[in-house]
Image 1: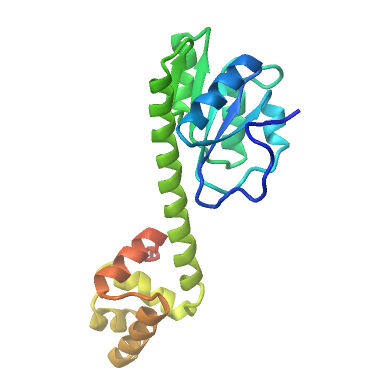
Image 2: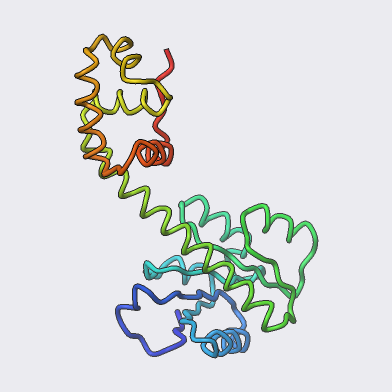
Length: 219
């Protein structure tokens, strides 16, 4: 069964980060819960990877404190499963029986840290701080890209074509020649593109095109 560090209250604040703990040892779950609550962090605890997979997770900045050795799906296999299902949550591994190959596999899989029990409380808190900040930045980046994609979808095929050529460094005259258009027509299209992409300047437009991965089609 899923254990919650605090009595259930819905919804969890959209601004409040959450630390998920997957650990089969009850005393360790309790100790970690008390540690995180002592610094004002929300915590949700699970006794197995399967329990967490079956739960609806809040859409907030978060990280996962994960034991390597678990009943059923191991911590390392759970890390791989999350990657396969495109769930991007920073992971801090902990183990009482660590070895170098295990830690190398964890770090290659993108883990933030690999802590050997018994670890210092401050080491865990430092790792969680780094992990939550990493997730917050990823979420902000995803939000920006999603917003740009909404704007990009409003462009016509011709405008997208011109944006790709602009992003490759071509001037209006060159774009007109390449597409067989009048230069004034290209200027009009560029004006529409600037407005639809909510670009404040050419440099701003180029940054947005780069973020979206807009590229000139190869001949």
